[in-house]
Length: 241
Image (cartoon, rainbow, N blue to C red; front, side):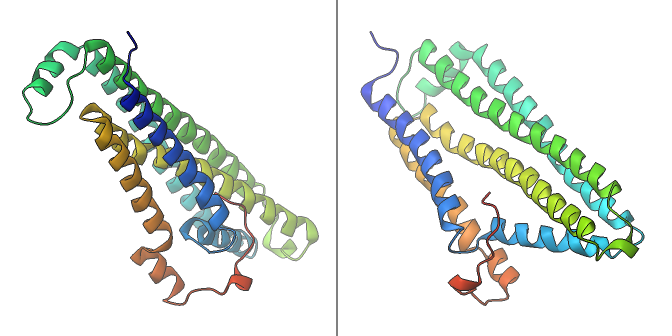
C-alpha cells in the first residue's frame, strides 16, 4: 500500500511546482519590471559608492551589523523551527487524536503524519542553510567595508571596482536572505497539507500571490518609487534575486 494517495502526491507536486514557478517567474519578470528586490540592489550600489566619499565609516559598519543581526535571528529561528517539527513527530498519536476530532480535514495514519512533518523540517533546514550562508556573506561584506580605500582615493579606478564588488557581494547576501524568508512563507502554505491536500494547493497559490503582490503591488513599492512607474528602458540591469 502506497504511503500517500494520488491526490496527496498531486498536491505535493503542486506545492513544489508553485514554489519553483514563483522563483523562476520573479527572476524573469524583474529583468523587465523593477520590483522591491531589484530596487534594493540599485540602492546597495548607491550605498557603496557613497561610502567611498566618507572618511568616517561607522554608519556603514553599523548598517552591516544590523543586517547580520537580522540574518542571525532568522537562522536561529530556523533551528528552533526544525526542533519544533521534530518534537511534533514524537507526539504523533496525541496530535492525530486531536485532528480526528476536528470537523474538517482528512484522516491520516501515523506514518503519513510523520512523513509530512519531516517535509516541514526539511523546508526549515533549507531556510537555515540560506540564512547561515547569508550571514557568512555579510561577514565578508563587513571585511570588505574595512578594506575600502580612503576617501581621497574615491575617484581611482581601483576604488570604484572595489565599490562595485561590494555592491555585488551585498546583493548576493540579500538574495540568499530573501530565499530563506521565502522558504518560511511557503512553509506556512505547506501547513495546509496537514488538514487536506486540497487546502495545500490553495495555500500554495495564496502564498505565491501574496509574495508577488509584495514585490510589485505593495504600498512599500509605491512609496519607494514615489508613485512613478519606471519605463521599461530605464530598468537598471542588476543581478536577479
